Length: 424
Image (cartoon, rainbow, N blue to C red):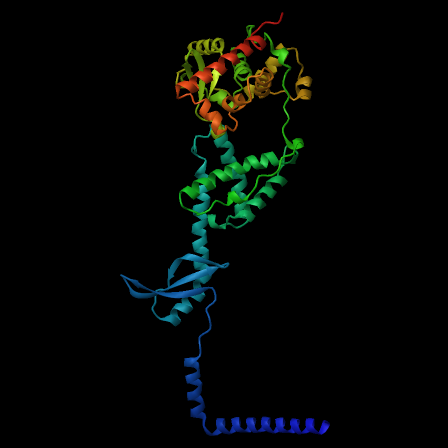
């Protein structure tokens, strides 16, 4: 066996010697032949595949036939074609190799300028009938939170914003410190509403094909994360609005929220022209609200309507202008004044978590306790309205008006017993 291996090894060595001597012989004696064969090989060999771009022939009216470069960046084709200003492939290749980084960077900087300019101006004007307060909140979210996050992630165009990026934005918000503690899940979800508004619009405009927000779920909100608000006992309010208040503005603000369940922003926007008379009952027509379901008709007690009319005449307020030109802090003053009249201390307000908005909770608790019906929460508080309920209380048809007025009269009866009635 060892002898056979030696024989094979000798044969291989002999072949190698012959090949080497043959190559030396040909190179020495036929140099021109070698050069010709090398040239033919170079002409017929397939060129190396270009990395990150390809060249396309296009006709130019000014210059005739020209080669244009089409780049691929991070695995994605850039839609723009870049002129190489030549029809010579070698010169075009050289131009692209020298200028590739500059051309791609210029393209994305232009795209980046467009995306951030659009985001910065998106909520500078009102969008889709949202309230002025919400518009300002959304504008603040986009400018102070979303845009800095996108720049940190080096986002250059809307197409780069996907589910992964948006979830990362949620995580970033959760780490944001607000009032000495991390932002709560409910606040993160509210911030994301601004982002959703933006993407809903740009999808309709055809800037992107699919809304990435559809694939991002809101963060789960546990009971411990919810903002807890207390409210007064049902019997405690009796008679407080039957007495004269020194500050008429504070009286009107408190009586509105405790007898209508309106939101703070809706009270700030109410105009005399928003109040309509339907079959003998007054209603406040809410046309701009926090949510789509907030657009509704709210029953207004006749005695309160008369006081609002007197307020308008006394202050010479145009019927097309809001009744109250106030800052948000005025609601806090109104809450403190009501507490003072009810002989409730600041410490008790803090302990029971009673704020101005608690009047809305009081109204809901009162109406539920008096059996006005679950649908009342839907049609008059601006919560999500089911199709059947919306149809039943459609104030545009006679039957809907009759149902709405009947419910309103029941509501006024409850208010007369619990709010406007003087304590025995």
